[in-house]
Image (cartoon, rainbow, N blue to C red):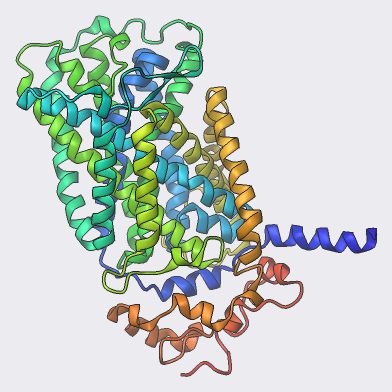
Length: 566
């Protein structure tokens, strides 16, 4: 019995650490069925569109009031450093593995299926829950905008979540008189509809919105700086009071405002829609992060200077702070309008990224295959887009912004840790693989500090947030055991018939430009002249299957399969 059990357990372990070969990942990405329409400017705009949003328009005030005081400026700086280090790692990984799926795809290629599933499940916190966070902030600015412009006051019953989070008692409390946040639900569903129609339409809208919100942020910086009072910066680091302030408060503030930097990695989820992903993805990631870091530090400095940090525990801190000063009505209105536009673009980008992660996981067999289907007309992953949008709307309608934001931040920190480690692993597994960008200083100088600092910030988060993260990951492991482990394309190739593969590879769904590229590369990629993939050699695994996937650097049949046509 023991002798029989031993090999069984070893087989399970091999399955859990089985890596998806880089050659297969690149081969599948080369046959993308999505339209390649995004250039360098589009990718930078996607990054800025995703980064600048709730973090600066909403959570800055909450982090200052509850956690760091004026030292929230330091919190932004630390968060920017962590994000910058991780941005280098994301740039290398995205230029090497330019496939939709972000950290999930990178982890699958470096650390195996189990960790890939964990990070894919974790990314739901970053993208889907993140979009819900932004939708709640959008609702707050819409309410303020209608009040300032039209003197219309919305009732609390339909614009706030029914529960609140008490930072001192570390407990949920009933928000008396509030039932549901209808504006947050509305914007979530509206953006979902836009994304179903297609990425190019969404990209055009995003460009316009990005310009609007950058202009508005500059208006706040230069329009409000004359109201700065130096006394508001003292004490810069308030003495610790319970769960707030002090050095720990600065790090808790870092974890909270870290949400403000989430988004640059969303650029990598659009890899299969970029015209030249290896060249342009690093530009999109690093360029958008650099621009936003400068804006963030400037905004937080001005905000904490024009009003006491103790008064900033509101959902619309920029306009609230301006209300304390005369002749600022029109500036407030412009900022509210810009915030509404800006937050809309963030929801758009986050709900763009999440379905594409579902899409990639479905094609790996870890999610139901319907999530990997493209719409015949719009060429978009419409099923995961609709599912993500509906779940986002539900979360935004019933949960408060700080809970949603904290969960998004810790989920993203975990993703950053694994991506930094992934760079080191890939340097050793595939030292000669083509990289459009390399992390400067070798595989250790930047990735190790990037992973270490992200881990410190994660550990210093408050207990309830970490508990919720572990509960979420535990639920994910149950889902993986029930579905992903059984239907994984890497671990169970025998369960994938040609009909199953054809379900994802309907040639009628290919863009014409993709068909031409497939024809050119067919003889080297296991694709015949009709645009059909030679499935069996690409996915076949000799016994034991997982060892083939975790050890092989060459996939037999990709280049020399006898059925591949020249």
